[in-house]
Image (cartoon, rainbow, N blue to C red):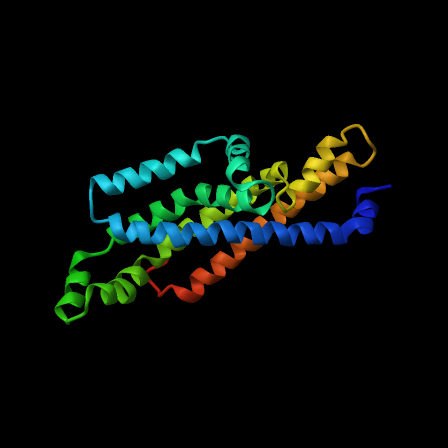
Amino acid sequence: MTFLDYFASNWTDVADATLAHAVLVLQGLGLAVLIGVPVAVATYRTGAPRTAVLGFAGLLLTIPSYALFGLLITPLGLGTGPSVVALTMYALLPVLRNAVVGLRALDPAVVESARAMGMTRPRVLLTVELPLAWPVLLTGLRVATQLLLGIAAIAAAVNGPGLGNLILDGLASAGTPYAAYLTVEGCLGIVLLAVVFDLLFAGLNRLTTAKGLGA
């Protein structure tokens, strides 16, 4: 049986795993945004606090994937819980760093002009600072997504969803006729998602970024 024949016999399983993989990555990315952007807003103008949060996020990224997923089993059990938390932790650095860089790169004169017009601090943030920093922040989301797509495969080690299960099944059945096919299906699914997400982010950048602000 060729690879194409094998894929034709189990493509629905691959499709389900691909969808689950994408959802898992989006969950981790979404939580990283909900945490990282407010922290960036709160610390980007400071010195020590900004350095501390960036250093902490950087430290999280250095933890080996298998070790982190394994450590999260004790408080969160198996399945989606530890998978989402681990991906959130890994996505924090690119999201937080790019949000800080984007906000700090703004021309102070633009912000002061908005304040001189009577805008409150929250309004300046929502209508001036964040929109101007958006291209850089979007780049951080793009990088984080590509990073998570690969790391999410490790979620299979803790019974998490996604394409990692195909890869793990293939590795576990090494030596059998179709072991390589399972592994290739999982890897190709991740590559396909990486291309799709990258195209989506590129389109989102063109649609939401004013000319002259593109990252």
